[in-house]
Structures are given as structure tokens and as C-alpha cells.
Length: 333
Ligand code: TYM
Image 1 (tube, rainbow, N blue to C red):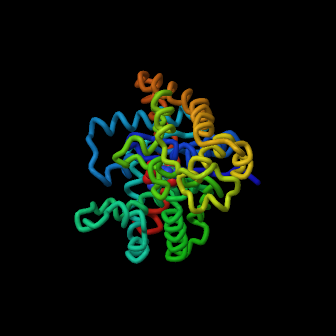
Image 2 (cartoon, rainbow, N blue to C red):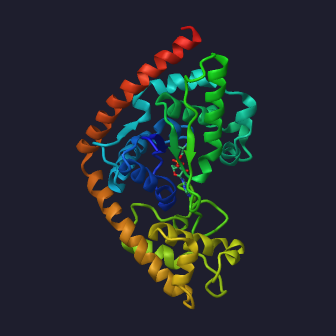
Image 3 (tube, protein in one colour):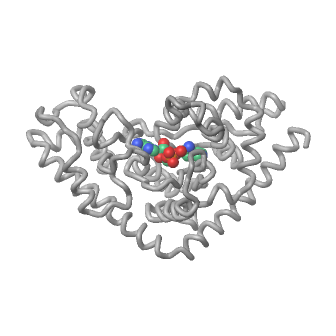
């Protein structure tokens, strides 16, 4: 396989968690280390589709950048940049919104979930957010997009927009048709309190997630309090289907240990949950503590973070400004 062109993004809305790490950022690092061309974006234009406190947003943009760095993204190898600093994203988003169809957007389940019952009061930005995401990807001719399972439908939309543009403007190779890179297992990490709900930044209970900035004690406490049941430790994957909380915890263990689910179950044969939880906490601490410490160290070095973003913004701008000019030419501008 040749070099892949990778693009992905993370919203700077605070509380980046273990789901973001396992479902997305950990894979960004692997793809970078396999010598692909990687671009990782702090998607602040996506963040403002729901109201943000401007001061907090600035802090969160830096903290998300610090998280990328602390997890192992290397700015000498990959481009790390800030979406709102590259104006082509907004321009491309408008132009592609004239290609995307209402019917396609009406099908987006994440909008329905996020807007909830009060749909009329949701921002227009929240509704067309998948078009901005398509613009992000298509501006860089990305061939592969690593994301967690919850972004699958948005990527399908990006592919549809790309194909329609190429057909409408009779330019078969103008946009690439990006491939989603979604892990077969562990692409959806669930809440520690409810195994049927996704682990999420916006869950009001902090006990539902392991934040990448949690202290060791917080992590140990959250795993201790994570929901289990009174049945024995499972012996086969089949029985996990009706035990979503247990499946999630063993999934987190397996993913961080880079083991198959079956092999993890074998490791804990005849053990109880308290023994398993101790081992799970140990493993999370081993993986997350160094990241958490590095995020804190980098957060204190604003000058360095801002320089990383500035360099990344310049590089991203160079690529995106050429593509947007060609997109505009296709429209006849
Ligand atoms: P965001 O910021 O909600 O999440 C960032 C990444 O983390 C993954 N993720 C999860 N994976 C597994 N389990 C979970 N519980 C979990 N929660 C979040 C997400 O799937 C995502 O990969 N729209 C995107 C950001 C975006 C983007 C893009 C991504 C904007 N432009 C272009 C790829 C390409 C979002 O809101 O992700």
C-alpha cells in the first residue's frame, strides 16, 4: 500500500476523553508513525455550532492541540492546525452546501440526537455541520479519514458530496472519494455509567468518562464506580451482548492492551470484577497518566502551542488556498 493522505479533526469543546483517544487519536498516532501524510485539525468552527464561551474556547483550542502533542502527534511529521485560521474551510463549506441536498442532511442521526425535541431552536450551523466536515476533508484531497463509529454517517455524506460535485462539474477526478478508517472493534467507547450510551464530553456526569486530564486518583475512583452487574465474570463473547457495561470495560482493556476480546476474557478466567477493575485501572494509568501529565506541562507553555498552530496554519493554508481557487473556477467565479 502506498502513502495515504490522512485528514481528521477533533472539536475543542473540553473534556477530551478515553473514547476520543481509543476511537480516534491513538489511531492518528499509528497512521503518522506508518509514514503517511497526516493532517490533524482542531475544528473550532464545528465547536461554535453550539454556544461557546469565547475565553474558554481559546483555552480549549490550546488544550486540544496540547492533547494531540501529548498523545504523540509530532508537528515535524504531521500538520496540526486550527480550522478557523484557514478561511478556505468556510468558503468551501458554503460552496459545497450548494451541492449537498437537503434530503441527505435530513437523514443525519447525530443532528437529530443533538438537536433533540427542540429542533426549531437548533442553530443552522449544527444542521449543516456535516457539509463543513466534507469541506475539511475534500480541501486536502484526503484519501483516508480515521474516526470513531459515530462519524460514519458524516463520512458517507462527504463521499456523496464529492461524487455529486465530480459528476455535476464533469470533473471525474477533481475530488477524491475519501475512505473512512473505522476500527473493527472498540470504535465506540461507551459511558461508564450506562453501556448503551456513548462516552461523551457533554454527559453531565463526570463519572461517565475518563478525561485525558484526570488525575490517577480520579481514574481509579471512576473505574471503581463504573457500572457492572452481580453475575460472574463472563467466559465468552456471546454472553457480552446482553451485558453492555461489561462488554465496554473489557473492550477498553483489550484496546489498550492491544489484545482480542477473547484473549482478555481468558486472562480473567475465574476472577471477580474487583480484581479485573484493579488491573483495568493499572492499565489505564499506565497509558493515560503520562499523557495527562504532558497535557498539563504543555498547557503551561502557551507560546510553544501557539507556534505549533501558527506553523501548521501556514502549511494548511498553502494547500487549502490552492484547492479553493480551483473549486471557485469550477463554479465559474
Ligand atoms: P468529535 O470532536 O466529537 O470527536 C473526535 C473523534 O473522537 C471520536 N469519538 C469516539 N470514538 C469512540 N468512542 C467514543 N465514545 C467517541 N467519542 C468521540 C469521534 O468519532 C471522532 O473521530 N465532526 C467531528 C470532527 C471533524 C472531523 C472533520 C473528523 C470535523 N471535521 C473531518 C474527521 C474529518 C467531531 O465532532 O468529532
